[in-house]
Length: 132
Image (cartoon, rainbow, N blue to C red; front, side, top):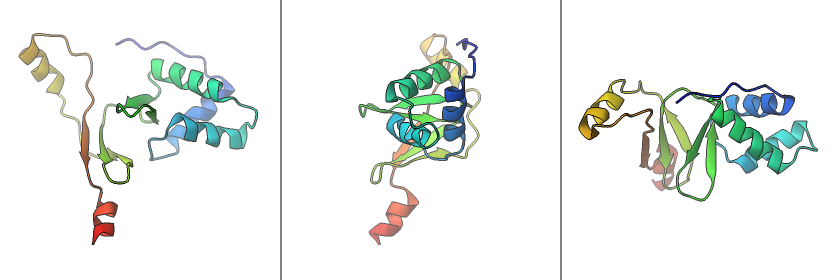
């Protein structure tokens, strides 16, 4: 999928900086609260609009898990995620992506695969320790 070039406004640079400086995968509301610390007059609508522009440009990833709200990832490279079913936190999985997975699925479906996303679900190590 071809990404659109984007002009980096002050607001977009700030949002991108916030996302690239967190390991979490925050919601737009969290990003809005963080941007207000630097730009108190920014509106939630401006944050949402700029998140959309950054997603379309391929600068960030938007992850929708069917929960009614999206989470955003400042790492646009293809990588896998783990979501804890107990605490809800999301982590990057530090594992090399399966390079030929798109080709395997293309051959299986006789289709053209443009991209894929893989998520793992379970209970994180912190929640497992808290159970003991």
